[in-house]
Image 1 (cartoon, rainbow, N blue to C red):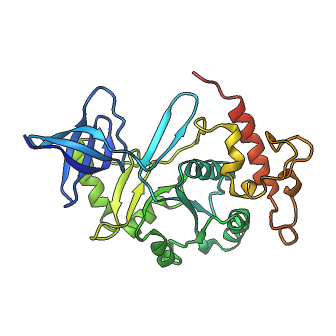
Image 2: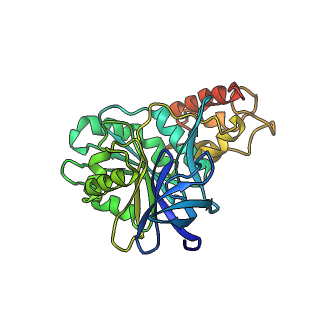
Length: 304
């Protein structure tokens, strides 16, 4: 029996998790107590017990990226530097889901970037790129990518260097291909992790931490796909502050508690639909519509 040690959680499944120490040594651990609150990216204090170990405590997190609906909370990862939202020219992406992921990152103070794959699709790519113009205008990095021929991969690698990045994306956008291009040994690693966690197989139903280089300074965290992205942990009144394009227009409303939806003298709505060439604070109409719908949803959420 040894003393307590610090390590990072690099994979988790059910009641098991894999922790990695500063030398790269990995150990299967089990949290104490009935409920596990450990997520990938956590720094934990653990105690050896034979070939395995027990988690004694979770060190204070810098952040936690998660979603929450009426029924449950789903945590993706902790202690992140960046969230990468991978989209593609096809299938057509949901701007509502994109906005929700960006809001969840902003609420935790995590940088976000958008990567648009399938540059080889020409017209479809151009249309998707145009849809992302409001996001570029509000300062969110948007990178083009062609995984088919590797176009844009070097620029993306630069963006990932020195950061711990969670990759999100709907099915069909090339997330697995991206992980395999950036981490050639990912398949072997996931096999080892599955055996260590005794899951028997690996699908991206579990979040997994991959180092991008031997020095272990940059990491890619692969996450499961999702159909819905609940934001029930956010208050409707915070939304405008968490949306950079709306936030830039705050401060000129007649009422201090303006919801920016129907009040007279609203300084935000004055910029909705304006020409960006004439108004530097122009807010895209579709972005404002998403704000309005989310405000409704979060104002009427049930509490338990």
